[in-house]
Length: 365
Ligand SMILES: NC(=O)c1ccc[n+]([C@@H]2O[C@H](COP(=O)([O-])OP(=O)(O)OC[C@H]3O[C@@H](n4cnc5c(N)ncnc54)[C@H](O)[C@@H]3O)[C@@H](O)[C@H]2O)c1
Image (cartoon, rainbow, N blue to C red; front, side, top):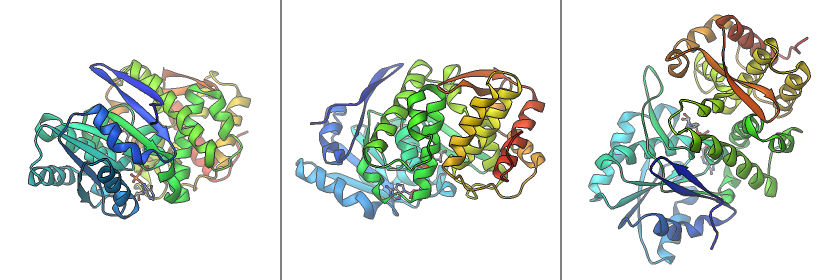
């Protein structure tokens, strides 16, 4: 029996995080250890169910338990209150009561939507995340944030609902499209810059992580996120470090209409923008900024479609995290160390220019 990789503490308890190759078969016993729920409901997407629905059902059958299945049509545009409501309808139709555990199996979209449904059904039932993308393993399944989108913005409707466990089976990534692996790789690179120099160096050469390296990358990235979220559950302090690359990245994503580049690619360009801001104010040496930029570019993020700074600034002005308080950005000071600093709009504009220029292939002088 695999032991947890780590235990994630939070305000009202803690949960185990499992990382390993082939551990999906242990899901029923892990669920049994963390939840005394009588009914297990696997929530996944119609697209993903053929990939691992049978494996999960088979694991429960071998353990002498049964798990019900609920599927929905996923996609960033389906990460809505209506979809979460549909999941709640399905739980009610299954006769689910408080002693239900929702097992959210999928990428960040499934985890966020099914997790949000679990957080509102009967004021919250047990939730176990089974992330199936690299991004979900290193980022979205950890930390207890669950949300759906509103027509006026991403993740505007959500809750904090800590999982009872997270089970990351690295083997599930075998079917992940290369571009989705790349998207998660940029989140891992981000974690390296924030808090783990060796993780950064593992990824610096630009090779796509695979085999034992992939597991190492997941463990190290998850450890960075765990260290930060367990000290700051509700994003008032250190948790903002995780926004490195995201302030400009989110605005790039919104300005390009979501989908032109993946979330991780937008973060990649946003990291280059943040590096320019950090070196512009003398927090980061020019050489280290160039080193991080080079690591990002070595992985080959898809270029941004043509856009001008004004569109990105307008998108930034809609960012709930950015406008709700002072204008702060997570800025690197070295590989493995970031701080959260208050910035001027002009500095951010120069960061946006740097990101757009890098995407266009221009090297900073
Ligand atoms: N809650 C949080 O803290 C948090 C943090 C970061 C991101 N997010 C959210 O996560 C979402 C992005 O997540 P994502 O990058 O995982 O994207 P995603 O969930 O859209 O998955 C990407 C694609 O990969 C497919 N896929 C998933 N697993 C697969 C597998 N094993 N094999 C083959 N295909 C597979 C999906 O069907 C989808 O087409 C966004 O909605 C974002 O807002 C949440």
